[in-house]
Amino acid sequence: MTQHGAASGGGRPGQLGAALRGWRERIAPETVGLVAGRRRRAVGLRREELARHAGVSPDYIVRLEQGRATSPSSQVLAALARALRLGSQERRHLFALAGRREPDAGEAPAHPAPSVLRLLERMDDSPVSVYDAAWTLVASNRLFAALMGGVLSGPAERDHNVAWRHFTGLPARVSHTARQRERFERAVVGDLRAACARYPRDARLRSLTADLHGASPRFAELWDSHAIGVHTTDAKTVHHPDVGPIDLDCDVLQAPGGGHHVVLYTADPGTEGADKLRLLGVIGTREMSEPPASDHPAAPVTDRRCSGD
Image (cartoon, rainbow, N blue to C red; front, side):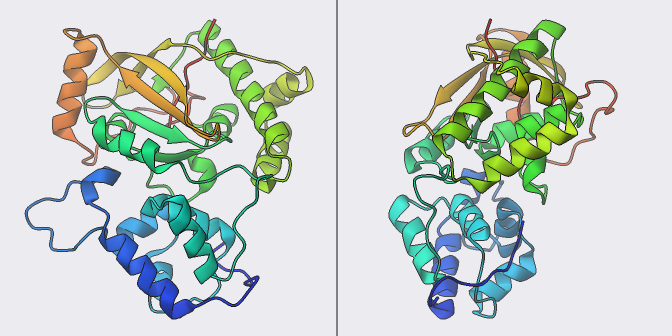
């Protein structure tokens, strides 16, 4: 992710730094999947925690807050708005303080609605995650991070993109049958095609689909054939390194405005899957060993979306 760029207008670095500090300090750690702990003295998020969630370096956060970095790019601003859970007015104010134009209607919204983020905070007994129109992970609750393994800690945006991880064969914790894989692939390609049509000026979407077309013969085949799929409730098996395989139901919901997808994993009460989810709630997001990559290839760590019949 680019951390620098020429400002499109007159930014206000001092005010930008003060605003970032204020927004950072009001975020409760547990709302972004962190455990506060008794020894924690910092108010809100630490700089390194904000940096990790936004995909930038801690030093860059320091320089922004001190007014020494004066021209953050639109991509960085969008990532900061997402990590800080800013509402639409606050997001607009952030871009104004940085002297940049907020993305217009021809670009996919990067930041989910505050109501969607509140949903994450309230659903603490089920893994929940939120993805943008390109199927890049933008938010998740603590139980989802425990299930999938600290999925917001990677530095690169493509590391959190479902389509990129799947079609480039990156390792994952979720396994699928051949039939499920076929349904998923058709659905994700159809989703990306619809997003490109809806947001024709979104450079990130165009870049993602072009790179996927060149990197994956399977993606190119489906894209060129105009494949379309439909998402419904589906079953998933998540292979967790500590508690073993977990059989779960998965549902995809469309957030208000149509720009984001909310994915929920649930288990019937009294089942082994429900018991294992409760155990994960106790284990939390502590460091865990990863399963061998060869066991379940080509499924994204961030999520394997529900795909319907």
